[in-house]
Image (cartoon, rainbow, N blue to C red; front, side, top):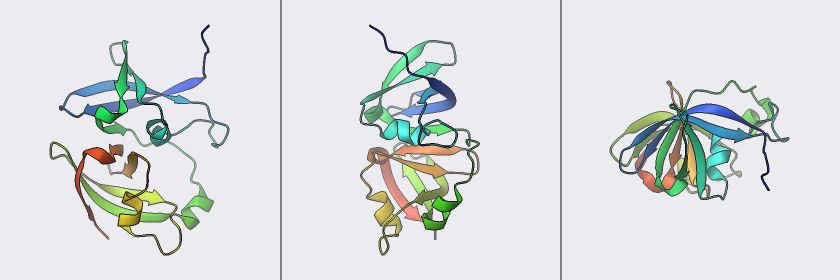
Length: 153
């Protein structure tokens, strides 16, 4: 028996631990908790499942172990601004250096408890992937492949 889940694709470039880069699209599931009805890429990557699917540019679908992903880059998504979240979220400017030496400068947004809004508090959150908005795109970085991070604030 096969169960179909409604999804929508999002263009993605996946960089694996040994340096291989895969271009394609990830599948975002429908979600009733979002205004636009879709989960975000960081939610997909932070789900507990060990693998996710990537439809390669050529049409094949590959199943990728999240543990082997250094980072995923996606175009900025056209999401409506959540004014309530922006009022309570902490914006943190970071320089992230990942395995292989790639450097990303960008901003992260997190809802942190009062008194715990430092970059270190954000980086110590339990989710395996962090979201970083850069000038070029949005990058989802696997915390286990980070070499070091500098807070730019």
